[in-house]
Length: 213
Image (cartoon, rainbow, N blue to C red; front, top):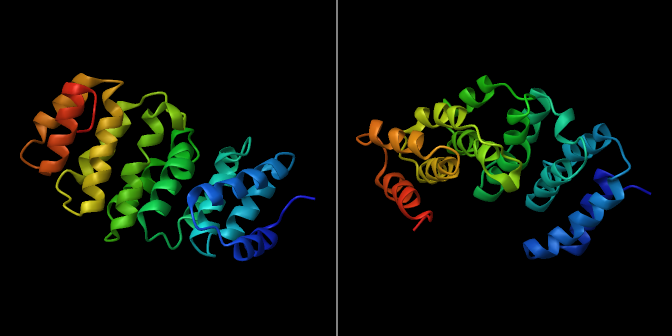
């Protein structure tokens, strides 16, 4: 019998995973059990988990990402519901890399939603928008390379000095280097007087050596 949001929440409470590997073993077992369920059923489970603590939130995102068709049933409204309460680095990056970024890449989330997040006073919404670009360029996350869209998002935060956004911007630009080194190099030159020092150092090192540091 397939698990439900209720049974998954109960299992998480009972088993109380202490590390990511412990939790991921549980998530993989649930994904196997849900493989025959429809993407819509998995989305309902995900929505029933997202407000119930860190492990449940991460389970919500990974169940969708690892189910065939899971990303395809997402809508802007369901993605906004899945983003409720984001207030930490791990949750934001999992949401952006596993859910919102792939949905944006595949045309299920309009760019205007990312622009709304970029205008937010909430640092986590701004970070989420920038990290969404990782799904465009990192092969392990399904990226096929889209430097133009990446740089269009990055331009909105070149003056942002929140540490979480600065780190996200560096990650986004470094992820794009594989696909178009010249475009990223031109971006650094164009915004050299606006970008944080960390971004300039890390991206320049990536361009020069292929590594972050």
